[in-house]
Image (tube, rainbow, N blue to C red; front, top):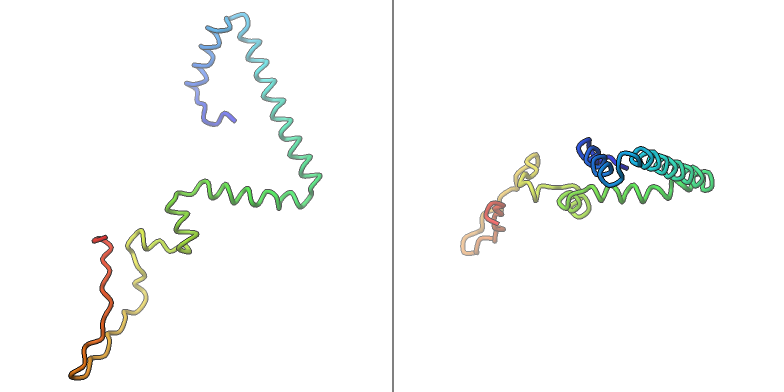
Length: 128
């Protein structure tokens, strides 16, 4: 719950509490806050256990979409596009193409009098 609160922030909260509440009431306020957080944590873990018992194996089926959603929340826009639209091929972003494939064969030469077949223009990723 307080994973992002460091020692400096905790010290600042104690100093503010000391100024606002005074030295007489601060220990009681800290004790009350600790008990309230402990009760809330116990309530949440009890509710989770109760849901697991009530739903049984269906509870994991409910959790799977949530875990997939959390995976998507952690993705950068580039990673999401690469995964879902480009099937994991990020060569469009990196400019590194598959060089293990053999190079394309050139078109056969045109007989005399006929125009040469059109060749596709080369793509230059640095020019775009």
